[in-house]
Length: 142
Image (cartoon, rainbow, N blue to C red):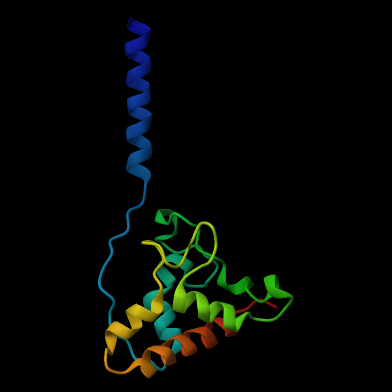
């Protein structure tokens, strides 16, 4: 009986330690930034998960269900060409993967969020996504 109580105490202690190490992410409303600079939008909207250097290791990455992608390797993983249309479609509609990244609570679909910033001007939401995609294209590792 004493060994059972000791084992339960150890399991409880381990469970408490693991729970204390888990990162939580506070979800906040989207902030308005200028729609022109892709770099500014990246740092405001993407860097928390994908990291300042876009390699996938941002401060909120450990709390994501799906590990954030290394955005610097998109071209390398696509025969050397940045997959602009695919990247744009994921921002617009979400991921088509079995375990979705964008389109989940962790990783939003950006078109509705960008549209919410300028509800009567859909072209600005589209331009935000193009500017962000063009910026990500410049980050590709050689």
